[in-house]
Amino acid sequence: MKIILLEDVKSVGKKGELVELKEGYAKNFILPKKLGVEATGANLNNLKLQKQNEEKVAKQQLEAAQALAAELEELTVELNIKGGEGGKTFGSVSSKEIAVALSAQFGKDIDKKKIQMQEAIKSAGYHNVTVKLHPKVSCTLKVHVGLQEKK
Image 1 (cartoon, rainbow, N blue to C red):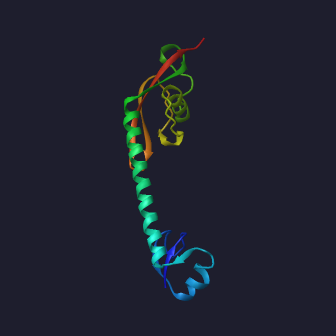
Image 2: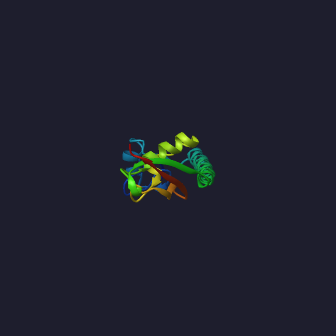
């Protein structure tokens, strides 16, 4: 019996797949628990339309991420960190602070988890930070850290 899965089913298949199952298993387990539907002409057509819609949405998200990446490449985020004599800094700049500054300075809301840093920035100057906007799109954001003299 051919079944279109509505949920991921362990050792059977993933959501949206068309699978061939034994009739007893399909009628007694998959269909009553609404884990899948029978592969009729109407259901196959719905599956096809749903996959086309998902592809269209994924393409739009990819294009939006590419456009945002192009904008971010041009920007330089300005941050100040407290420092003392000789360029010593007190504290560091984290991805959260970069995200807040990016939102405040340019109105671009980026989740702090998308800003990838191996470690926090602990020195003044220009730094390049990677921002992963989409699984296929990442860009480099310039961050300028200035020293604010401690009083």
